Amino acid sequence: MLLMPAPPLSLTGESPEVNLEWLTTQDTHPLRWRGVFIHTFLRKSAEFHTPKWNTPNSGASLSGEVSLSCLIPDPPSNLRNSPMRTSSTNQHRCYAMLALSFAGTALLLLPACQKSRMMASHSMPRHQIYGSAGLSTSSRIILDGEYNTESYDYIEETGFQDPKVNPLSTFAADVDTASYSNVRRLLTDGIWPDPGAVRLEEMVNYFVYDYYIPESRSRPFSAQIEITDCPWNVGHRLASIGIKAWDVDLEDRPPANLVFVIDISGSMNYPAKLPLLRRGLSMLARDVRADDHIGIVVYAGNASVKLRSTRGAKRNQILDAINSLEAHGSTNGEGGLDLAYEMAEDNFIRGGINRVILATDGDFNIGTTSDSQLIPLIEEKAATGVDLTVLGFGTGNLKDSKLEKLADHGNGNYAYIDSINEARRVLIDRMGSTLFTVAKDVKLQVEFNPAEVAGYRLLGYENRLMSNRDFYDEEKDAGEIGAGHTVTAIYEIIPTGSHDSLRKMRDLKYQKNLKSKKSNRIHDEFLTVYIRYKDAKGRPADEISFVAHDRDFVIDECSADLRFAAAVAEFSLLLRDSEFKHRASFEQVIQLARSARGHDPNGERAEFIQLVRTAEALQPSRTAYRH
Image (cartoon, rainbow, N blue to C red; front, side, top):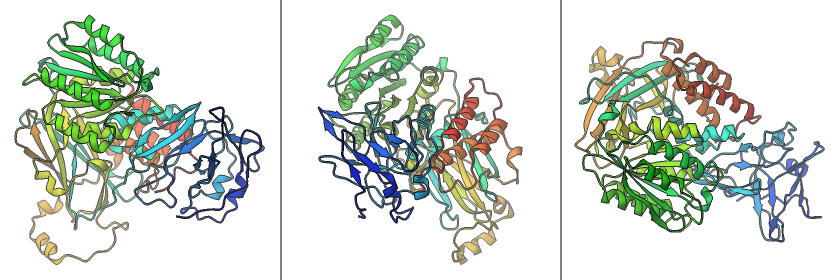
């Protein structure tokens, strides 16, 4: 562990002062040292005071209180610095990170920053976040008198694979959308998102795509595969795989047994949390069918039944229960989930839809709180045939990493609700498709032809990757897909003959001999997509496949759906400051998205373009630390 000598520190008066000019004179390597703000708490009458940061050549001071929970010098690849948020009216762009000093101003130093950026005097937007996610990172940030303890898992991006060595890429389908709406909330609030908050596949899958309609219910998936040039990496190709599930008339869906388990702890007592949830549930209550059943379990310090399973026809009774929800106390999430699953099992509808819907910020603090204990509980409950939907709410203490895991292991999906429009989208417009599952344990496996592909990289799906042998393992859990849902996967491809090839490897003589025996038809194939799934009742898996060829299309010749998905993917690379972003730019994202707006009845694609402009204005002078 590397340590730096303590900088000159003045403790005169009520606020400590740190001279940043001293910090920038230290001989530090820009990649080895990551930040050198010092955070000092002084306590007087049980109150925290605001330290002053003397910035050289600025004629002003940077005020703010920030603490950081990931304090690891020279961090390994699976652990990065947590995000930092500062509260100040006069802030300066820099890559300094804050370390916590407690009990007599003991100083912890985080390795370092780039000296050239430390001295920048440009104004920084309020609530700017810099940094990168750590393994289950948790930032503790004082903002307007309150801590920010949002947590995100570290994302280890997948690199390029050689199809001669690894011809197969296998992953579970994912229809979660939480990442996009959460990133939207952060950027709209002027906050640069933690890279762990940017799950590329959820960003892309948030949007609706007009993919081919499946032929029949017996073959419940279609695949629209397009191959074109890569906008951000000249000489590379993009392969977009768009999957669409069989759709049904929601009037023909079976009755639903829904149990809402609602967090009413004190942390939910904010307009964007419980009040927003009440408004969303009220819309849902007016939209349920008469033969549906709704139950409500609430939890704070203890869990209790707010509304026993009630027929949808009794809307006033359901609405009264929703409107009486009030926030107070601590957070016993495990107790609420136990009681909710018990209610769902007691009112189980054979052949119907049985689902628990958890609405929370995820900040469990009593009972079972750790992921390692909660996940087995959720997996056990999922085996009963009751699925789980997770709805995340609020800002400041969102436990995104926990909520995503619960949904993934509960045969469900995860959405984040940041506004009444998103509540309507999730709870009204998309709820029918979410509830009606047409396929379970959906897995995708892509085989690449080494005669056409020198290297490939799957964008996103880092926490949905599976080993190739798991594709045929019926015991391995994968993704659930609802009626009419679409799933998009994008690969960046290094074509054969490219100057940007992978490291030279030995030519494999047996593969070479086998390749010479293949027909020209197979030799010309670019890739094959295999989809394996179980039906909605969990009956034995079936498998369908689709073959694609590269017709040398440029991106302007491809569908609007491909262009828009590529724009969202490129935007995600920029937000992550991905090492694979190459020539990606916000302006290119905007141009690509503009060309692909097409039919946009709800204005979601137009909103995306505005969000990109917001991010462009917020971006640091040099985007977040490179992993």
